[in-house]
Image (cartoon, rainbow, N blue to C red; front, side, top):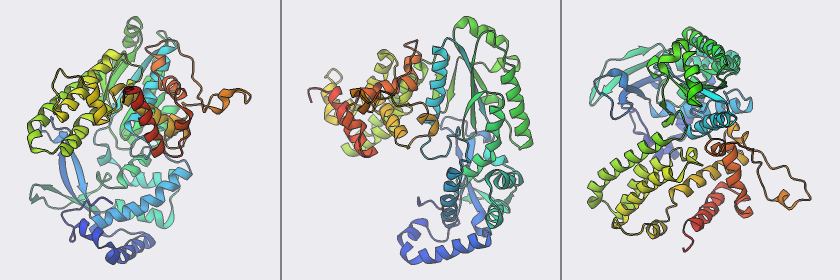
Length: 503
């Protein structure tokens, strides 16, 4: 447990953690009593809400720009963790969770979600067809969850009954909250709807609340992917194809959300069309009410996608952000030790260069050179290297892999996880072993099947094509690594040797 706490906690969480050998049995008795009786004490259900700006550059005077983070008593979060440790294995064993929901799930991330979506889009374009992507977002989704509907979902969709269902009913009902700003507190008010943002069970319960949505979309034969309250709908199209299935699907989604007290945020609805310019114009004219939402580029889970899927706007934004952070870090450099300076550079620069960088596989080197410039600038700032000095020995001394090899590292790491059951099923399904006769030497080389592609800038960049090609080039001892830690170490050494042969 992280030592988070509520302002109403009598004993700070770090003291409870330090003295757990003494107070642990008492806490255990409290939690077991709650689970056996199917009740949650009212003092565990009071949240202190601290509004936080969703983004630092938003208008602080607009209330819509704040996210209400609930701070709950530490012991109540321990109890939620206990319940989750029993609920999650049950959901996994019975395959109840939506497989195409990547939010708040282990082994899942925004990167795996985007890899799946971009892979499908690139393969669609490689086959010569157009594609359309619709991005949907909900307004205050966590705050409008109806408790009665959620309890019905837990009983009928998940199969929770008896005392366990009574516990969830007690957990959801009669909750209260107060708002804290600086040292001031508001009066207490009841919470009739919603699941607490900041709780441990809240994200899981919201995912279960949204379970029927996947079946509604599948009924229309439309591909989709979900991340918490963000929905991505996409499908291949020919210029003469009708968009009616997509429009019917959106109508059904809106109808279902209305009956479940959820609302689409029309301001964040965005539509992108991928394909040749001539066919794009025809498709746009058939979009009816969606035509005003068509964009040439859109931010999707933190990555700027463009209609050509070349990611140049994403790379430009990442580089611009990195250089801004470097200018800020340069001002505080005199006050930091070299180790602390390197930590800050990794936190503010490397993290931005590495975010979803597996999507950059197969991009032209001219684009990747922009990212390399940011990494070079960070290395010069850390080491004090002059602008015109050669950067390669500096990167080698720091043991920093160049950007291109960092991308390869991330892709190969995802492949290793997929082959060893540590990745989402929708990623593992994209990778297939090479079926070679046993008599051939290649049968024991742990090769992967490389699907055929038509276009270098499209099909060759799809994860299902690019990842197996990279994997097949690896030495066998790296592929057969006994654990992910050993794999990382061997792979980094291998790529470092390729990056700096003289080293």
